[in-house]
Image (cartoon, rainbow, N blue to C red; front, top):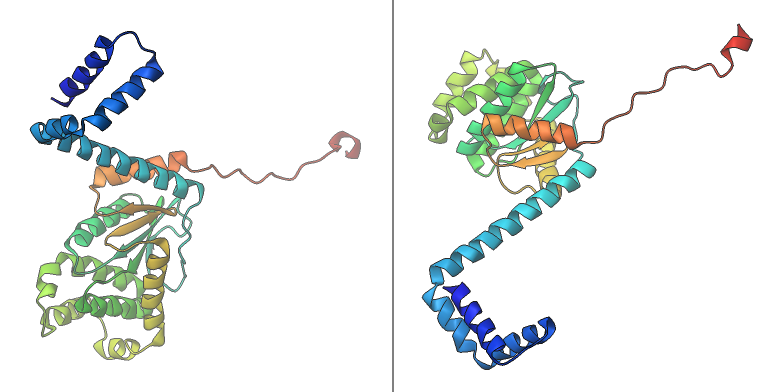
Amino acid sequence: MLKNTALFIILAMFASGCVSKQGLKEQIAQVIKDNPQIVLDAMRENNIELLTIVESGIDSRSELKRREKFQAEIDNPLNPVISPDRASIGNPEALVTIVEYSDFLCPYCSKGAKVARDLVASNPNKYRLIYKHLPLHEESKKLAAVYEAIALLDKEKAFKFHDVAFEMQKSLYNDSDGKILGKILLDLDIDLIELEKVLKSNKIVENLAGDKAEAKLFGFDATPTFLVNGVSIRGYVPADKFESIIGLILEKSPKKEADDGEVCEDCLNKM
C-alpha cells in the first residue's frame, strides 16, 4: 500500500533521533530524493490505488472548475441576443428565460428539447423558451433553415415543427430523398410554395450565422447547451435535475429591487 510506504519512510526518520516538524519534512524529502525507487516500486505495486487517487483528484478539480464557472455566470450572466422576430414560446415577461442551442439530428438534443419543452408547457407563465441553432451536420443545417423559414411564416408552427422533427429524428437522419420532411410539412399545413420563397431570405442566413457566432463567443462547442437567465447548462440533463438547477440559479441570482413609488417628503404640511 502507498500508505505503508509513507509510514515506513516516517518511521525511518524517527529512528534516526528526535527531529522538528520542518526537519522531518526535509529528511523525508531527502530520503525520497536519494531513493526514488522506493516510491516507484510502491506506485507499481499499487497502480490501481494510485489510479483511483488520480481520478479522484481530476474529478474534484473538474467539479471545482464547474462550480467556479457557475458562480461566475451567476455574477455576470451571459447575454444572448433575443430578437422579437425569432420564434419563442411561453411568457415574454417570464421569470425564467431558456435559450436552447441545439441540433435537430443530435440524439441528446432530442432528449434535452423535450425536457425544456415540457417544462415550459407545465408553467407557461414562469418560463420562456427560445430555440437557437448549433448544427453539426449538413442535413442539420437544412432542417435549421426550414425551422427559421417556417418561423418567418408562422412562429407557432415553427415550434410544432421543432417538436415533430425531434420526435421523428431517426427517420429524418436517413431522409436523403426528403420524403419524411415533406410529410411533416404537409401535416403541419405549411404552404410549400411560400416556404420555398422564404428559404431564400437573407434573414435566415443572418439568424443561423448569428446563432453560430454567439455560441462561439460563449464558448459553446457541443449540443445541447442551454442558457437559463444567462447561466449555462451544458449537455442533456434529466427533467428533475434540470428543474433543480433552475431553482438554484434563481436562488443564487441577485434579487432585483422593486422600483420605489412616488413619495412625499413633507406630506402633512402640503395637505
